[in-house]
Image (cartoon, rainbow, N blue to C red; front, side, top):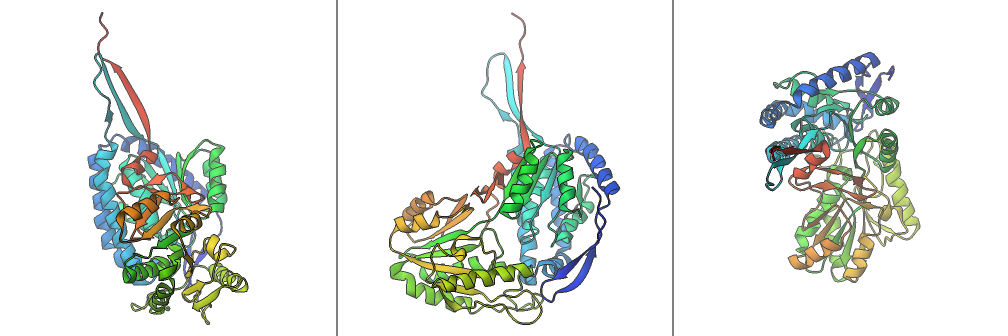
Length: 464
C-alpha cells in the first residue's frame, strides 16, 4: 500500500496549481483500518436514533463550512461558485432525508405471529464501507453513501476522485465537529494500486464506486475475486422525448438546463433529445435561443453560468464528437468550439441532422454538447431512446399524464421522469440498468445495500 508521490490539484479555469496533496502513508492507512474495524464493532451497538442525532450534528457542522467548501469545489473541478453553493445545500437536504428515513428503514422486519415462535429479520451493518465518489458532483455523490452507511452502523473510508480529494476531507472534518466516536470515518489519498490491495486483502467489506464504465468494470472484477459486494454508478446517455402536446416553453427551458448545467458533466444530464416532428423546428429555435443565454467564463465570477470542463481530455473529446458528427452530415447550430486562452473551456453546443451512427448520440459526452433528432411516432421514439448501452434516466415531456406514464413504462432506465429531468429525489431509489450500474442508493431501499439481513428464528416454547 505504499504511496510516495505528492500530486498537484490543477484549477481547470486557469490551469494553475492551487493545492498539493500528500498521499496517505502505508503505515498510517493500515493503522486507520485497524482502528476503524474496532470502532465499528462498538458503533454497530449504538441505537439508530443516536446515530441519527450525530448525523444531524454533521449537517449543522457542514453548513457552517459552506463557503470554503464551495470555493474548493470550484477550484478543483470548475463548477461555477453559485452552483457549488447550491450543491452544498442540496447535499445537506439529501442527508436530512436519509436521516429521517433511517429509523423506519433499519427497524426489524417482524413476521406474522406463529404459535411457539418469535421470528424477525434484522438489518445488520456490513463493517467498513469503502466509498469511491466521482468528481462531477463531489458532495452529492459522496453523501449518497457516507451518511446512510454511518446511519446503518458501518464505518466509512472515503477515497475521493483524484480531481476532488478536498471534498472527502470536508466530510471527515465536518464529522470531527460532531460527537461521532473517533475512527468511524476517514478520508484517504491513495492510488488505484493501493485500492486494489485493500480489496485483495479484504480490508473493507463493501465498495461503492461512481465513475466510468471501464473503471467500474475493473473494480468490479477485482472485488469479485474476493466475493465482495459492490454498488456501481457508471454514467448514462440519457434521452428526452418531447411530445407534440408538451408545454413548449417549459420543456425547452428545462431541457437546456438539464443538458448544460454543470457544463453537462452529470451522469443523469440530458445527452440526446427526440422531438415529435410537428414541433421540431419550433423547439430547436427556442432551444438554441436559450442556450445562447449562457455566459461561459471564470467560475469564481458570480455572473458565470457555465465554467470550464474539469479536464483537458474532456475538451478534446468534445472536439472529436462534434467533428465526427459534422463529417457525417450533422450541422452545428451554436457553439462547437473550444475557447482560446488558458482553461478547459468549450462552447455549449447544439447539433441537428444527427443520427445513431454518430458518437454524440451513442457515447456518453459528459460535456456541453447535445444532439436533437425529429421522430414521427412513439414507436420510433422509444426504439431510439432504448438504443443505448446505458440506462440511467429517461425523460418524457407531455401534458397527458396517462401518455407520459405509458411511455415511461416502456423506457429502459432506472429512473424515468415526466416533465422533469436531471434531478435526484432522495426518497426514490437511484438505480441504473445495463452499463449504467448495479445496486441502489437513496430511499429506504438504499439502506438494504449497506446492511445484510440476519434471520432470527426463536422457539419460545420447548415443553410438550
